[in-house]
View 1: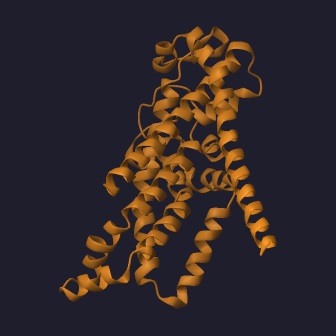
View 2: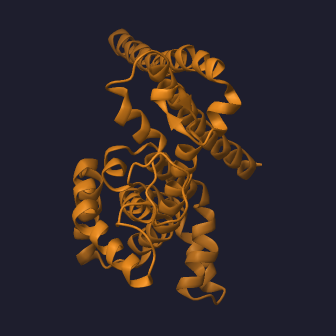
View 3: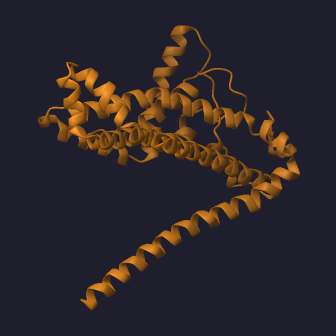
Length: 290
């Protein structure tokens, strides 16, 4: 009996240490980012850094508003494309998918989650960019195929596994009595699902969407390959843009002094974006509990 208690205490200690390491890692990242990024913001000027429309490191001009807008536009486009498809797919897999094809569909979605982002980038470069280029030529718009629309399409594909997986788990966690009760009251299967089961699984579905947003806003390699990487104010969905993550990766290799610190400050802005998204999700969950 004493041996069993020692094992339990040891496991509790291991879990506590793991949790502390996780918290410490987040804390160290915060300290590094803010200790190196905030002084750079102060030197450049907070307003000038966040609202400046020009990024010219050679002239000590550091304005990241084009990158902020580029990240927002690309992420919003990915949400518009990926969220409806992901949620509808999760509903199909949870309630309507025949058992003989469920295993293969689940396998395909898991495979989609395991594909490296650089492979997604190659796919976008070879398939999506020519398709978007032909579409822009057809509608008479400007663009060479790289831009907001192409990046949104690709990121919408990349966030699908996250949204589908968590949404399906949330839908399956809803008691079957909810769905059966709606059927018993005379509702059809579609209405029962979307008016009863899906709202009951709202918290888990929103969690999947939030994680998908985090994946989209933090994606780098695939976006670098197809977004155009033009540090200028976005003028249309067919025009090239540069995101915050792409700006850091492209220039960090050769940046020095204030330029390097400005890139770290860009990471601070990105960190704040992700923090605000998670904070809003936490507040939404708290309101749902009330």
